[in-house]
Length: 317
Length: 304
Image 1 (cartoon, rainbow over the protein chains, first blue to last red):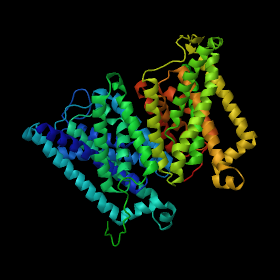
Image 2: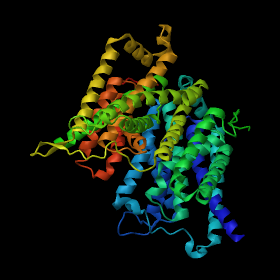
Image 3: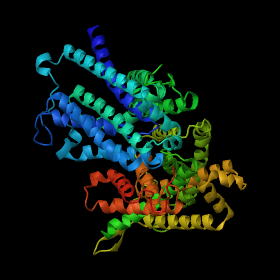
Image 4: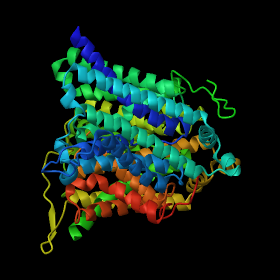
């Protein structure tokens, strides 16, 4: 019984962390129409940034600045934001394929850099020497995990409230206006390039927050954690949940994460031994089918975007 | 240095063929097709299958052509593979892209192409296995072009380059001399205006997919010949091919051809200053450099 509960705590923690990343993507794709092909780079920048800033000094790689945890987490978010700024400034004034290709490229390069630059990130061995905050007081047991889950849920709720307020505000209206008709928005004196850059960076900072929490949860991050798979999973979560709907994005995160872990468990339990090496391939085919199938048959997702009529900055859902 | 340049040109020929089809599709249908590189895999694997069939059915075909490891069987298999890959490209358009397009959701096409790429890549892994394969088990020794500086080249690589250059020339003549070429360029420039002038858009879209698929298959076989065949060909080549289209300017066929060679050369020359572990990052650095210096590429024009 206690095993089941602690597994549920573990599952909910990871799903909630991913839900925060999906919310970040929803701001970019759902509300602004920006395609981010490299979610994992911004997630990874948050994770690596947090662990490098908050860790203890290590002989074989950089970092170990031993900052107090909130500052380290904030630093991870800033790292994700900086990365987004570089990519965004270069590509957001071009047609949309450039953003798609560059973000995809930045994820490839990020993973490659983390894997090779041992002086920076410990290379393939990953980053060690990070101590989970308050571990001395709370220990490593169930209590710690439960409190950490509460912390993650709190941040998930805060992110959700922040985005709901943002989307309901005049700024949110502007985002949708640019998504629907850029020329019209421009003719009203708005500056789509700047607004898009702000939305792109904000979304990436939220992904960086998710990455920072992920790194904190495992107290470890390695190049294996920043593979393109994560980007595909996060997209599937948003598309299934419903682009443009924050509640849908969270639901999608839990649904897809449940489906992913269940399919992985089922394959390892029931697939014949000689098929085991193909388990990963089967899971990828499934996630590909989910993405393509949703686009073909239910592009609005399970929880479609509800159009907000905002009057004097007041959102009616 | 010269060896790096030589290798770069050989890789560049493969990238050029891949990027040409991609840039046409991106220009006409206006989306970044992340599944294009999977067409190279389809080409490489279908040539592998046909090659085996021809060799077992007609042993005469299994003799090697001159100093090459390439056989007549592989040559024929390559042509069939081009057809199969072109047909698959049309099929994917029918099954996925056209239906998403008709929903009027252009931006979702990128997602669809990613999903499709995942399905194709892993389905190939499931069917053919995850380990690498080769067209020929014979070891072909590289010919020494010169000893000082040491220059090595495999006969297969030279044949590959030769065929690629012939194909590029044929493509150039078709585009610049025939009515079909004019129609193709017209559609790429302005689909609506081209339709007003009596060009059948649906037919042109099919043609572009067939052409892009055929060129991709050729690139895939050449890549398999000079490296090895694995289900991850698409994953490894998608970024270099995109880099080639960006260097040339998205939509420019000549740009893509030249871009392929530039990316191939740059990636190989970068190995002179960067440790080889960083080579997967090089295409991204090239993209960044182009966006900084000349955002629309060599021959591209600004479009929104």
